[in-house]
Length: 273
Image (tube, rainbow, N blue to C red; front, side, top):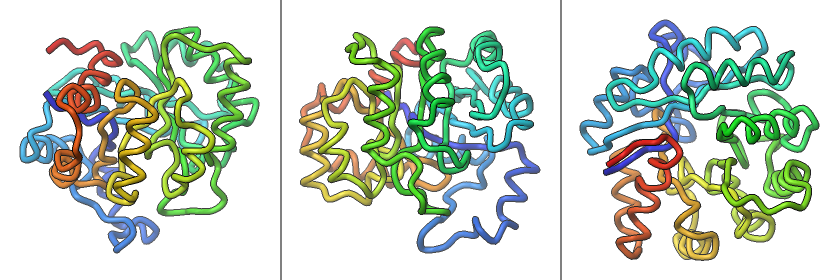
């Protein structure tokens, strides 16, 4: 089984508009490998041999909360696609909104500090993440340098570590609820090793898998632990087939490979093999 724990799709009209946005035009830095629709993702999954994909939507402004989570609920659990919900740090009635997300059958939320222009250790995020943990919702967080607007970095590893200290208050959770995307901090991997490796959080491999030095990658995977790593691509900005080729070239034990490729994500999404 293969689960891609980090993908994005959009309603058809939004996906079409993305290709007209100059900031998001394909380039050497940011390229599209599907048309960013459900149909495009399903075609990519079939070609790559991916069984399930997790979509991570982002509420980029507070007024988008309802439409974003309604779309997430519409696609969740159908045709091998699951979805988290999302929330904005400026949304009001946070607990009610998170309870609503859970009522839709969504297993978590996506936070994007860059798109939401909020540092990850901001008290609003800390309150949201604490509430998610209380509700047994997972939290996927864009971490490290962004591609379309790289600076400032709203979730560098040091701030992510500070957020963890604030959220847990020195406690050591038995079950990780937080996923730091892009190997804990895209293009900031030395700081990831200093500040985050070994903490009780998941890292996903999305987007950063082909950007990190393989020696450093293997060291991070070993030191952090296969039980806290999720395979992911960031489709449509990462090519699922290519990322699987990179992953399968890594010198891993079979049990480690299975943990990262599907077992960890299957536990999060409650998928039985």
